[in-house]
Length: 352
Image (tube, rainbow, N blue to C red):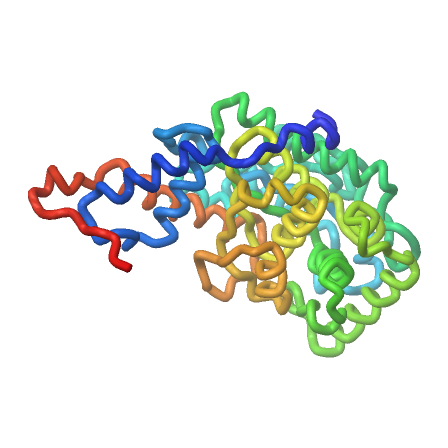
């Protein structure tokens, strides 16, 4: 499915299904609205599925793996070879996301959308657009056409997995240097200073952080990024992993399935998706607020309130997969709580 085709398929949520679900919550044996955002989640899922009797099906975590040319500027503590190593570890159940996903019964699908070397592991989906992005400190990270192709990889991955019976998704990423690209995109799209939105990533010193900030500033200025064109921003100072997740969000909306957002990098991708297709916003669910400096800024910008505050900044989808567990609790209550009639005590009434 092309990006244009996906955008045309995005529709508003089904209000009739949502109204039915709200009304049913109010018949269950508990104080009205006492499960708060859990009630809202189930109601929103009903609108997404267009189903008055919504149920969670198979869960999938899509992990977009890609390298970033800007690593050549010394903005990371580790080399880009780590991207491939961690991605392949996901196929051996040796990565954090795999261990955490097992708690919610979710399956992890790592996608090679731009690892810098060949990745022949059969457990990694081969969707490589290019062997890592170019160094954004020297020129555009990728062409506009490559950015769109990467978005379409995300759209098609959601479509493929939905065909296999998955109906709820989470995004994750793996890519050394992607806090640098994410901070660049965030700075431009939110019109915030680079200093305000840039953190130490995976363990930089204060001096290293200063260098990282200067590289981002240089990259934004050199590439003459157009803040009013999200794809221009993505292609010039973004990453292939970010682009793939943009596609997951737009694809989820087009295919009427909910998608949980992970941390800072995933949230930056959600910001791009919503700027491109505002109508996809109700299909996206926050999980946690990243411990990166711009964590709150990004969530505020896309109108999402996190369910979890845990000072996490690991990535891979580790926060998003916790959203699955919250959804499990919400649906468990919705379908197994007895009604007021069954509990033999009076109903609660709305009081003004």
